[in-house]
Image (cartoon, rainbow over all chains, first blue to last red; front, side):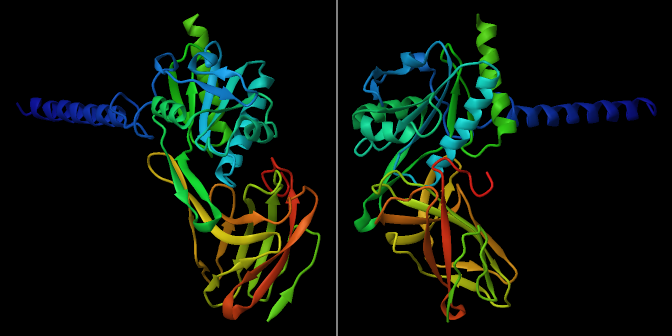
Length: 207
Length: 143
């Protein structure tokens, strides 16, 4: 008994530790992890919306299939966070290109009122040539945002017009349209690139 | 007290108490969209500095704004009426955070050009800096 007790304690401690670790894993990395950006976006193949790109082509979720994709929401009258995100994405695309891999990069406007295809074209073409700007009717933009679980809201700035509050995360999808992860707008390259590579590698595993 | 500092160098001296450094703007596409300016402001004095109004002939309205992102990943911008800088403190206006928003541009912001910006610190005077305009895709001076 005197020897069994410490053993029992030891075993108990082991169970408690294992449980603690398991619960920690479950909550942080495992299935119990709280989605950092609210709900998880749908798979591209489960989405249904039709928009037009900055060259006037009809586009939709199907357009992205076949290559891994980065998708993000913004508006071209956004002076701070949107250019910063686009500059980051340009850096990521260059890095991925250096590895001879291809990636879609789609900028969906939350301000279709001002961001016509022409306005989008004069804006997105300043960044990486792979970046495509998508716009459309307010109704279709809303449908697209719902699929990505992205949100946006128009905010008046008095006499000067309005700004848009919007989800700033970048959504990452595999070539077969599965959502894989989000990248924060200001995430350092050291974290962003491995996530993108994971999406690209996940493609290969599927084939 | 009005202190003029004109220089083409990226760093600027201010009054004894205020040092404005690494000011820069991103070039604009035309004049429809608001412009932006970034810088660091250092308080070398013993009093709290308060940056109230900012003005330039480049824009009809210049305001200090802060971009913040909530726990759902939604980014929003809010005006900051008075920006306080503690003694020996430094405040960075940088992409994705605090910035000067230049609304109703009076002329396009052209890469390679510069403009004059006046920062009013109330009792601590006014600091005037020349802000260089960097490329549209610039990350800041030296990048």
